[in-house]
Length: 96
Image (cartoon, rainbow, N blue to C red):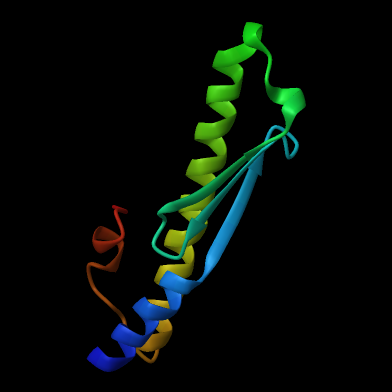
């Protein structure tokens, strides 16, 4: 089982997930562990008078992308465990 978990970790490091906010004006890409790998901002979202809105869009997109990575990791861990219940998995992934 430990080798399956190790393989799963390596697989997740190679995967990327993307989430957008503001109707696609801000996109954030993360790896399978939730580390931010890229941010794309539509030039129309850059308004010196609306910096706070742009900051909010970045945070929203980053949070959504990181949540996708957590969900994917949880799914992969459950699959690697062969469907066995994994007590404390939520705590390990930063969930209650």
